[in-house]
Length: 212
Image: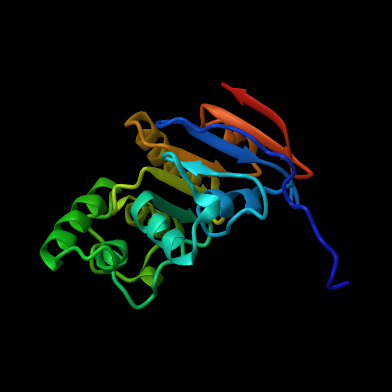
């Protein structure tokens, strides 16, 4: 059993242009998570090539992949992934700490982003004192901290009620309207249709790739 090889993705090929707002759909086991992990430099493909700004990511080592994530990407997760001991401001500042920003610059940037996502009145609260929607707003602000070239949103409304989910999607829509590049992973068609392009995966293959 240990020698069994599972091919999660099979000959997938597509381009993402700067400013694209794309959703990736598919049932469990379709390859969504594997594709997201490769695109987000959390994993490397066992075959094929992945070019990001002309650089072949498939040939990078762990240190180079980590540097790419810090400099190029922002991540928004279904489970928020906030640090419970830190305040709203401090959670937003985390990526800037790893980039070597000064305390003053980090605080100014975090204040700006907290206000941008509507949390100016909750700056010193911790995640346990926030609603699910507020936690996701913190996660969005944190994802924007390093001015990423590409934002990955993995089931960003999965833990939210429909009203709060709509509010979170409105924030992502506004970011896309500002020219942000966003890849949204979801199993819900109504969420996917916020994007301008929907890629449907099935059994590791691209079943459809449509612009709407």
